Image 1 (tube, rainbow, N blue to C red):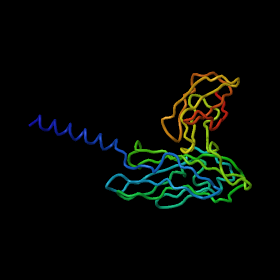
Image 2: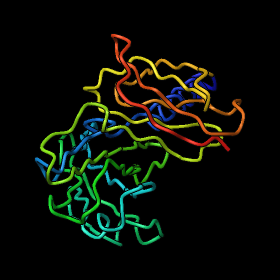
Image 3: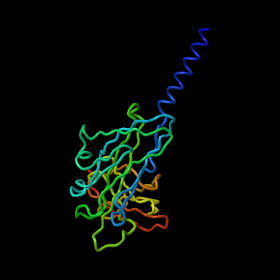
Image 4: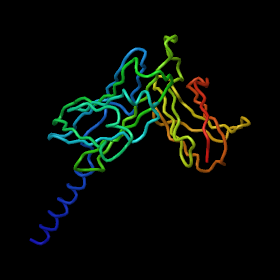
Amino acid sequence: MKKFFATAAFACTTLFAVNSNAQSFTMHKDTATLNLAVADYVYNNVTNTTTSTVTLEWKVFATDFPADWLSAVGICDAANCFSGTSIWPPTASTLHESPYPASATNDFKLQIPIGAGSTSGTYYLRVRLNNKFATSDTAIATFIVTRTATSVSSVKVGNDVVVYPNPATSSLNVLFDAASDIKSIAVYNIIGKQVSLFRPTDNAGASLNVENIPSGIYFVRLMNSHGDVVATRKFTKQ
């Protein structure tokens, strides 16, 4: 009898461990891109992968959006929409929550009016989402938004590239449009010597380990499957 209870207890413990580590929700994509010349919102919807309602908490934790964008930007979850200072800068009050029904896909989107602000360029915004009752059950959604000058009608491949943090200390994140076909990322020093080469494992971004390169100014070159340089970005290593 003691052996039976011990076996049952072990089985229950194992089952609890599996359930506690299971992902209760998924995002439609890791990185969503938006061109403000053609649209004012982009969806990155959430799918509840369980058979019960999941309450998600979310918070913007990093962005380099210009000030004139932040005053107009908004995020909508399955229940409400939030904008401006309610989502940035990050404070205790910026933690929002929304219930996501069982086995269903519901809204999570970034929106910003096409005519908002006057700053042009490509910028990013990142959101962390987690199960309210299992904080290790988490996901990160990245939005890359491009706003071109009114005289420009299209965005060239390579414009949707963001590097951060800049300056960098141990790692440098590189985000790019999956359509760019990026196959390798090289780091060059100021005199044009290659110091490292990386092969992205994700078709929309990579995290480069720069901890062991000396402090200074560097360039990252993103190359496609044909070896063509798609984009070059400068960063500083501290």
